[in-house]
Image (cartoon, rainbow, N blue to C red; front, side, top):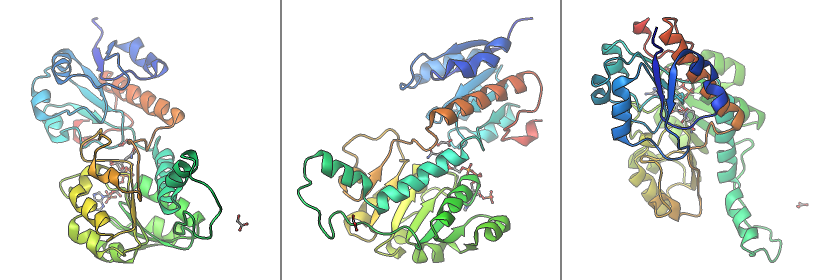
Length: 325
Ligand code: NAP
Ligand code: GLV
Ligand code: GLV
């Protein structure tokens, strides 16, 4: 029997592809940092039984309609806003992601970003490397505290809850807003469900970990930033699209908030001339939430297993469109 054909849209750790190569003929776009050109992706999708994709690949209805053999799309990410899941379901294509394996790693990074922004760590590190440190000073590079402050988590899912656990260790007061109540987290971490409008007014740190959907798109508007405390720090580790970036730029320029820590942007990658990079009180990272070597290996292995499972007619571990099976 002819082996199924799987296309991998970026070079990933070869070790993770071993089970996939045993089962399928595998072709890999050979670059690690350069995405596959759309034309190549479309050509590959036409013949593929499975696609192993990155969050930077747009798997839209147009691609799906031109992929007659496609049975599974496995994204190397927990977020799946780059995939038209409805179109995939319509064509009987399973869509898979990589939940759980990246939860703690992403929560670590999110909390590190919060700390880096609050305590001006990047700015301080640049200060010393630039040879600017002449003397110790009582308020030299003084930031704002983290312990005993109020954190407001928007999107209390797997990663949001893991961030709450870290916040609890820092004696923070934990507020959260989520589509549904999370009574387990309320009990375990003494977190308080708070309507969005109140949360943004009460929090010292507002941390977004809600997925990008039609409902959450641009949820952080000009009006939302205006209602935050002038001392508030905004942290975004979900997707850039949840923020009106022009509104955030304006809020920072007019000192309506005290700073922002951003791991994600509306259009990635961004260049050094991006308006949000002009502020000393912005800590910007190139979407590295889940980027530990261990976790990236685990994610790649899970994506491979998801593909093999679907091609074997088995239910994959991380299926987004339940109706397929
Ligand atoms: P998750 O477990 O599905 O958590 C998402 C949470 O957001 C859920 O609790 C969900 O509520 C809530 N939510 C959904 N729509 C909402 C809305 N309109 N208003 C309020 N809350 C809403 O996902 P996760 O594993 O924690 O991942 C969360 C997101 O983080 C991903 O979607 C991805 O965009 C981002 N992420 C970023 C990085 C990075 O590198 N920066 C890494 C990993 C993930 P329900 O419980 O009611 O469904
Ligand atoms: C990364 O951003 C992910 O969604 O896994
Ligand atoms: C600072 O280093 C101190 O000793 O307080």
